[in-house]
Image (tube, rainbow, N blue to C red; front, side):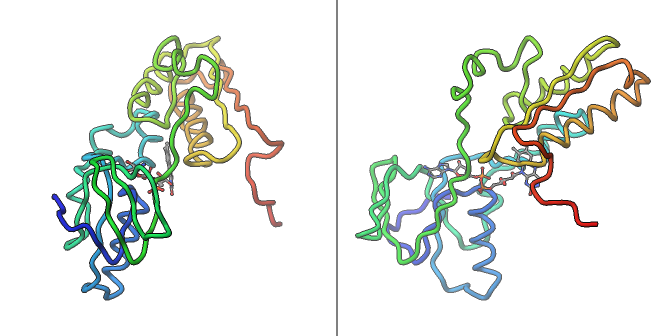
Length: 209
Ligand SMILES: Cc1cc2nc3c(=O)[nH]c(=O)nc-3n(C[C@H](O)[C@H](O)[C@H](O)COP(=O)(O)OP(=O)(O)OC[C@H]3O[C@@H](n4cnc5c(N)ncnc54)[C@H](O)[C@@H]3O)c2cc1C
């Protein structure tokens, strides 16, 4: 879906879960007449919460993928480009395709960007030798390979970094799903499952009794 207009009443930068939801919400609240455009470079949208299930071997990675355009609410145009810089004094956004687009209202939903390099050698280690991550479609398939390969006497180490990261529940969920897989295999007691958290607690909110 191309877009040739260079001014929109509402410009949404980032057409992931948040960007598409904001556009749909504006439409659903009766704002049919409002001109909305989404700046999103990727033709593919991933339903990221299901990565946890892919890593646990109970969901197919292909089912997490949809064409981005198929998810846009009717009447919402996509500008296939990335935002390069913001010029709020002029209500303008410069795009990677060289265009500048202006707006009345701007919504920024560019999500969280991975920076594997923040941990020394992680980028090189990922995807082999038992090092996996559920946070990327490029690596989540390998998580299930690693879990399947666990044998009595083996050790599975899971980590949770400090925020910000994409989903605080995700690191815990794959631990529980791994433990469940091991239980079903009858080897739960024979595999050491460790969970390393940055904080002294695993839930941010205190338990109310
Ligand atoms: C493994 C995993 C498990 C999760 N589990 C859950 C769960 O159980 N429940 C739950 O609620 N949430 C879960 N989440 C979190 C959920 O997926 C995110 O909160 C959600 O996707 C965030 O939406 P977003 O639109 O902010 O970011 P995203 O969905 O990541 O979208 C950001 C978009 O911005 C685009 N973008 C980036 N830079 C630019 C730019 N410069 N210009 C234009 N576009 C740009 C990207 O291409 C992308 O499409 C999980 C996430 C992961 C990874």
